[in-house]
Image (cartoon, rainbow, N blue to C red; front, side, top):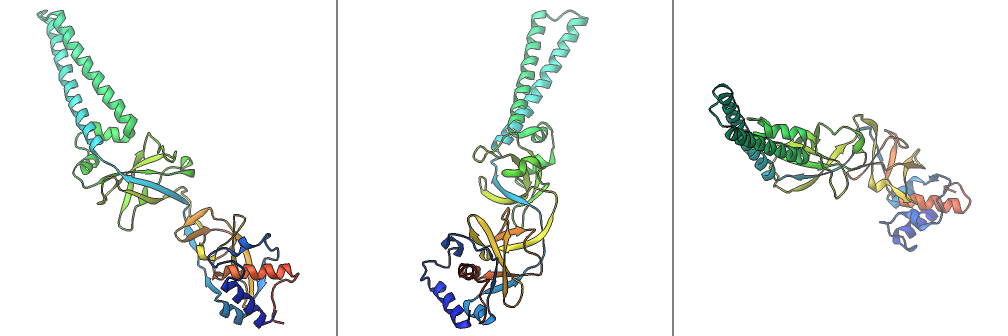
Length: 317
């Protein structure tokens, strides 16, 4: 294929005569993916058609899913804390009074059995109230936060009460069931959240496990956000593939790598790990290779045309 014919072919594609706008994957216009996997494009034709490549560098990536978070209203938590403190005080007073009267009754027999029974009933009622409040705390907040609520002078709870810290609820779908939640999560460039515990309740909207985190931030109550939620303690080596480099065929992602000044090779990649603006991949493309970041659709079309005509890719003849 001479330079003039190749430039004309690419120009036709660019002008959309074939009904394929550049924003649509070229592979969607054809009934079968080419089997050649390679295409040859002269350097002048590459420049004329705007094909661009970028030498990719290595990247260490820790697989993660999107965590869906919300800044919690602390009113129910702090109200329950006050109720537990009041119930504990009432229980202590009732127990002391019962034990006092019981001792007097045993030694001097000057306390009526009826009064002793009434005092014991008050003590048992206080115990039941305390148990009910503790069960409610465990059901809504889990054991760690319940421990905070039952204690006095807890620094974490004091930080929440005076507004120095915020309590976040983060739900993480997919594989997060199988791994421990991360000890830290980056909420933003300026804010990092620290794990408190798992929540005893799942997120009913996405049927995902939920975790409590503490953060020193100034987000408003009820504010919803997303954050990367690591699902593996192991970091993998690979490269980042920008979205503009990917073409799709039958739900499969492909990219082109320039293997010489005029040769391009189509590679299959996985999109298991999305990254901002693209995907992380650990196979198929390697650090140091030249990835086509603009014009992949045109290369696919040219490869298909060469395959359909029985050739092995365009040449310079």
